[in-house]
Length: 109
Image (cartoon, rainbow, N blue to C red; front, side, top):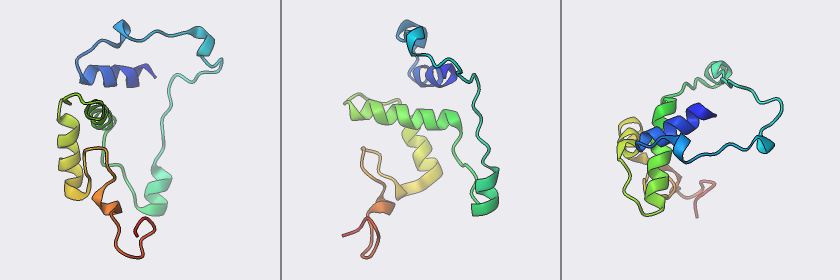
């Protein structure tokens, strides 16, 4: 968990230790220190492999959250989206343009 917190706060140049408090009452007794996904089945069965690294995902999410509350994001998250996915997304909190469906699409009119 702390790697995630460190990455999110680090993206905006803050030390999470100044803002986050841990309350032992809310810690699970069997907390796992490291969780690591294995995408091999997705690759094998679907031909899928990840294109976004963890730090890039954090940057996209933090920048989107900053923009959603009216703050100016750093911009790295938006750059990553453009670089990796081109124009199929819309940044300002809306669904991606790929979901702006053609007739007959599950999300379309």
